[in-house]
Image 1 (cartoon, rainbow, N blue to C red):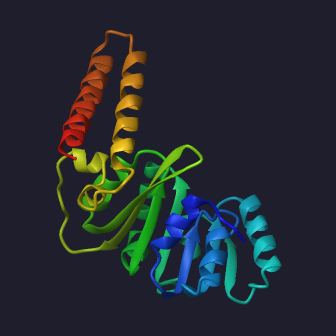
Image 2: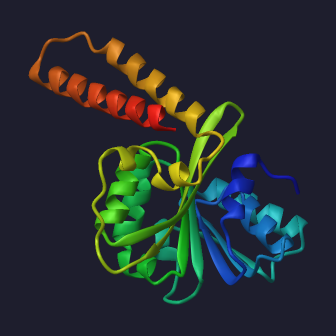
Length: 229
């Protein structure tokens, strides 16, 4: 089974382990791929919606992996028992939703060896939440698949909350340190998008003025960062 570049980049962040859970599974593609690659012995593919779970069950059956991949219907981390898996993947949903899923079952999330998260929007909100809750961002990756950029964040629970400059919530410090080949391109993309959003704000209200200030600050921070690369 071939999978997308986005899913491969997520799978590349997984260390060899006994078991893993894919929360909000993409039809079971990642668990099947990880089993085939020998990265884990067993996996759980779960989703809050019946359709993806049914497709995951179908795909798992085609691969004759029913004995090693469990497909479950349920919300967030509620489908897990304590110490049932070593690590988890939460991908393909907004940063706000990923944050809420973690917060709803924070004890279970903290008990993981690590987690791989792939927000499709608001990665800055997710990073800020993770660092303030005492999680260490141990690695990050960036990929471009079918014209879209995807940020992939690998975290584990640390000890002390960490405060960062705002720009490092907006863009990964790990990507900067590793001089990721897509970073400059991605920074320009974000600046262009923020400028586009700024052009849509035509009202002259206190709320609009606040939004303009926030966007201009982000654009300036990203431009300064770009000059340093």
